[in-house]
Length: 473
Image (cartoon, rainbow, N blue to C red; front, side):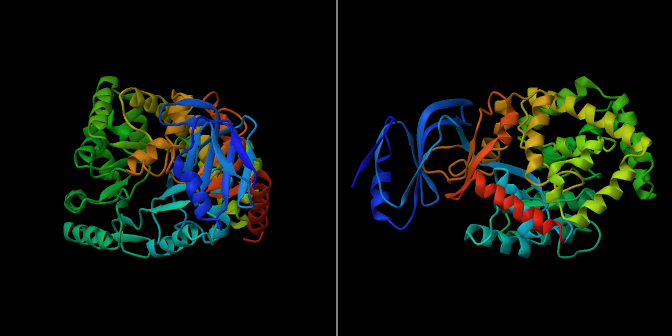
């Protein structure tokens, strides 16, 4: 038996022992690879990474690996390897039925997204899909289920109604029994129900997240323990010097089922933006450890509905044709001049706010809020990282928002988010350095999901199968 001498400093001793003890499993050995250290924000050049049984078994410079049919050597030739990405705001089971698991989930893997936080849907369906992903029968990302959505109104398979404090407490208790550790909610929850939810969640040690309900201020939500806020909901209004008056105006409009005043309230909130009040709020959010998932790609896309490039995006071939028709109809409405003008102003203000929030010390996670019109599963997470950089993040900070930070938020830094020995073998091999240019996260040479290696050729075949299926949906 020949022995490969690998040019790295040392290899965890258990790697060699496990390699011999489990001959049926394939060992992946990446040589001459630059490791993207998402913990420290640096590049470790000329490393070797060993993967075995779905885990990273070694990251070092020199060691011995036996040559046999169970060892696959991959000379990375100076390419870059980073942890798999996480999209922390998706809805994969509450969208059009055409987005089935054979279309939507492979799109994440093909884009290096190896984990998602699903913020609403049928929990039984999501659990079934998650189990198939984990046992390897369905190509897809790890799925953190945070559904069903807690909301006002009536209950169904995707939503649980909280129309009073008693229903709120009962729902939290039942979902905890179901095994949920994170709950998501809609903005129509009443004030009393929200506080009952927060109190029961604290008692049962279960986290809750989502948009800030219209009945609650951002400051109140943060103080009540809301773990993360999605799409900057309520932030702009909370930064207005006229917040109380505008909130009353908005509440009256909702009571009258009149959506027109929303534009007026938003316009006035931007006009009365108070930098000092905003900064104090951002510091409070940072001190309360209230995370943000801004989904800039969603708001920026809504503000670009007059852009003809949207309808010629090559990624649209992976969208079911029935969904594309729906998007075209929504595009016509959102491209109306009065709607578009406000969207452009609001999205520009959001970029400024996100940068101020970052400087105040608020923690961020990347999320796309997809699939929404022209927000493509998998692809749009890369666009989100690019928007974060445009707002003022460094490439390292943007990359951490989709790797290190989600793992920290989920208390799973021992498994995800960094490329270190003992962690899950969810890896993305890139042709160029993402810490120099965040757009390099798109230059994917290969993906490893739970130890399974997908070459560029295999990823292209995966995408081709999705495109073919999308044409018939």
